Length: 106
Image (tube, rainbow, N blue to C red; front, side):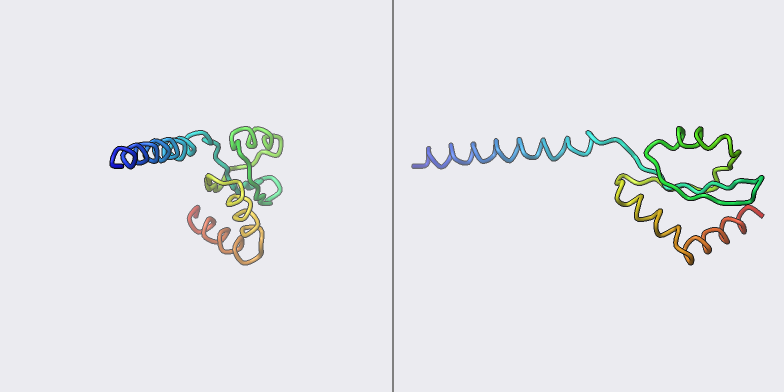
């Protein structure tokens, strides 16, 4: 009987160990980051808020408008980045952020 319980414990340990390995390896599979960014167009004086998974590519796409990257935040989750972008685009939050950025640049 002790033999049987020892084998059951070994089987359970192997299952737990394999599950732990899967859990341990999972975060390393998705190395993709998402960015929320704020650009300022100096020619026109407008600001643009957006999100992307490739910030360098997105800045190259905006080059024709000669923007300056003023601010960005990095997120592991696309959902979090989209939520933050929406929050920044709402009146009070973006106004306060712009005021803080303007104060820090002066």
